[in-house]
Image (cartoon, rainbow over all chains, first blue to last red; front, top):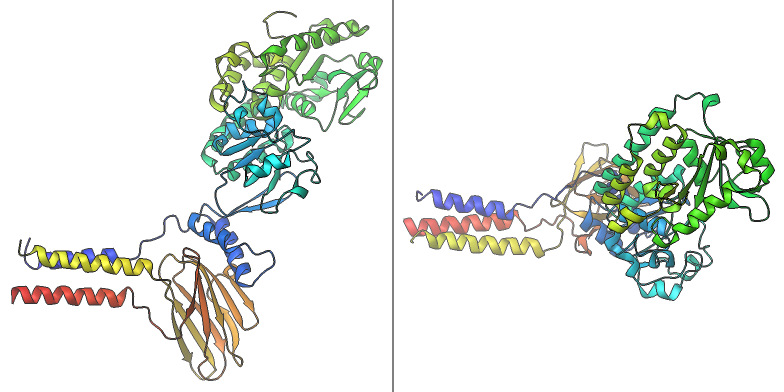
Length: 393
Length: 148
């Protein structure tokens, strides 16, 4: 190197050292820019609802990933200024969704239904319990120092939860079992847990399966659609417990191309007379059960439920019973993150000729493999629907 | 070997400069210009690159805030106080109307450090230009002394 070259090199080196580094990703997220601006301006103005200096500092450190804003299914908006790291999850539907998106490493406490569901949640079921989804254990929650609680829209009631918590702990309310809000809730969850990449992967699978069914059943004329009676067993006061508009089972059978015979007769969950069911003479009876699924020791209860329905006096005259078209789907299958597999299963029950090239079990196995932490015993022995060809029909 | 010494000195000076710029709080340069006879005054604030934070400018009585080229959703007027949210911008320009030169007071909140500093009117930041000039002078002096 020449004599002049070395000092020149030194000066260039010096200039590079002094030159301020460009902030990484500074201009990518306009939502974050607007939120951060609002926060800064509110803070400077001494606004009552202004974020704290600590919030703004953290948002600046994580900009443009943060701040971010989400709205839960209850319609409450939340602004997050930093990544969420300690989450209490009150119900299994939420836990299942978080696991599917890979955010379960941030769960620090779980509701009782998660604690007891060891095969579905082999890891997070061992975390400290925080009570039941209807009866939270406030002391246990506070001891975990969470920065977010995830629970159902209506349970526990705010008087049992928010009222006893400091306002710094946001309570996000989402269902994860209702088809009409499920996809939006997954998007919200992806944003809360900063797992957009996993969210995209999950939604690609979810959309592909929903599109497959819709593409095949949407053109069936209404008068040619299969008439389905949906229920969950005996009524609470009399007859049978029918599922109509506003229930997850209704949404499932409608998405599968069926017509709910109870639509217009009752709404939500309601008891109906056995005679009314017989008079409807549905082509298919679709039953929901909260048993079995990820609980291997509950298969007998599914079998009993099936036998109870097909042997109900007078039901032998119903077309669905005569044709052996009585089916049971379980909670862990029909609703939530695995529901596309159940949708394909139900659609193939209603319109077997349209789905001869699709194996619903294969789609469910793919779901279990890619989006859950379940082991081989669930794949081999779980009863997610019935009849499943493994006996007792 | 005889070339190594000036190189080491320059590297040392550079390192010290970097340390200085890394530990000092945000320096804001304010330039005030009066254009024409219509009483329009342009205030120009220069910031280092990459600042995230806020600026409060307090305009003295007798001067009216007219507007800014800064983004609307990053600006808020509260009487004689103008608030600017800074998200990486390195200049803020706003205009006033009034007679004479306003004695504007201001402060800057640097969210990356959480520190709030007063903007001293007319003060220029010593970094990086002054430090860079000093380092260059030092390097040239060493070079000339060694090879003259």
